[in-house]
Image (tube, rainbow, N blue to C red; front, side, top):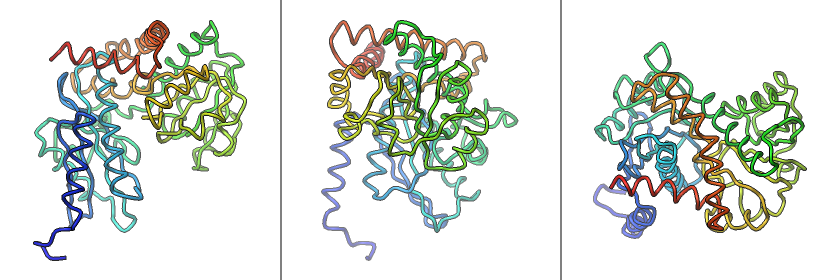
Length: 362
């Protein structure tokens, strides 16, 4: 295809992107491509009313570029709500990189990504996410100062996963208190789907609290680690939804709570670390309400990681950051109260609280 040639459906594709941006109220979407390194991806800035947008960089083998766009739009929107409801002065953003097995994820690759981040002049601050790490951020920071989740020895606060997991644990405990009258987890059956970085630390908290934990993961190394360290029971990924359990804790990718899985669920609570757990916020939030399954909105209870990144951005003390994370417990109960009083889903209640803070700032 020559440089002046234009795909027949280009106008339709561009129109669709703008339509999605308008519908989800995004401020800016930047597509980037670098031929020498093979780097290709998208940065989405959802809202910067409360402060610069912050969100991790995810690298994933998307089947279609449209999937990458949809993912980055949903994730960045979720980051806006996450920061707002947590009481921190950040907006929502996200980066996704389309993985290619033929491309080396070497220093040149990540430094080029850093340059693209820097070109946004601070409107977007990047951090680690699925497929990236503090070591990746160490490389990225050579090209931009707009990066968090840096290694401790590089002036950062290190891996945010333990902080994310602790916040999820607090939200899960609050959910159990709401549903069963006590937040005591002794003997409670909890199924954790995905035991990577965050899932691993969540399992640690749960087993220390006396819960009976079941785990599922497609990565055998992850399973081996939690079984060795915590003695948990492994179930097949396809069997986890029908497991007799008190709490289902999705900690892998999103959209696992959907029209196919909800009828299978035999739990009273859903509280996990994954982003965008509801495939459709309206439809599936209502389905859970009708089934009397209490859903802890993910963008609240998994906010520990972004709070820790905020600590790095604003140079907060560890104590100040921990106080914000501890507040997840109280805020979760506040959402449940609003949901009950207004007879709306917990997801809708959480979004209302998040949007209200943003509108008051405008």
